[in-house]
Image (cartoon, rainbow, N blue to C red; front, side):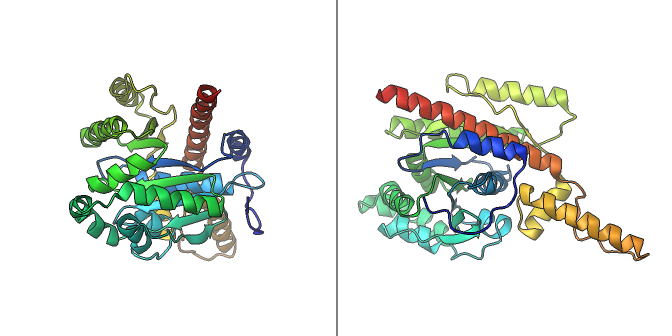
Length: 332
């Protein structure tokens, strides 16, 4: 596997344990693809995709080869989270429509490539019905070219970000991915998006897709609202009854200042920690010189938020290992 010759960022002890677990996965064949989706917008899909992808790609001594597929017209994970200008979704749109090879933007981070999203995907979604009438199968086109790219590039993991409203694109990703992760806020509109997505998930399964539900993630949570958090956790657990999975034990805390910094600076939660430390040292040095420094960042300590995502990565990997071991057992 070609990991390149770039220097690797240091990783925390938690990150090292995550990558040690990841190395035990059954990844000798094609990369595993995780779809991150909810049929309600604003629930942390793109932020979660970027944070998880960056932590897995940069962790440990070698990291892992990760590909992010930005499958939505808004291109938030491409432009806002990873800071990539992209191609307005042209490469992915050409793949879906015509079966053209996928063209990634390489090395947006160490070990991390991205297939950009953008408005060209909205055109594809609008024409999906006509394409189906003419015998064009977007899922087949996407799966074929994604597998070919993974073989060439040696990706270990693919993470797909899906928009909330374009059903033909969502169905395509559900037909291709191995696993589904659903982020949600605790409001009823977001939970309603989970229920709508669950129906499309089961429809995809009934249509022959082998996608498995990895779990539901509670996002933008107030850690002090213990009673409310438990109520929502119980509600989601009831929704998942019979699915073979449960909500993730970890929740992603509400951190408005960090959220502003991540989008403004195009950094993930993990990357923000070092920046905040540098900013704090710089401001202290200016204060010692009796200067009044401007704030470069709104958040002073995003480490707790980064720790939430580190624990999420650990739990994702643990569930992947469990699913992969079952697959091996079924083949024996």
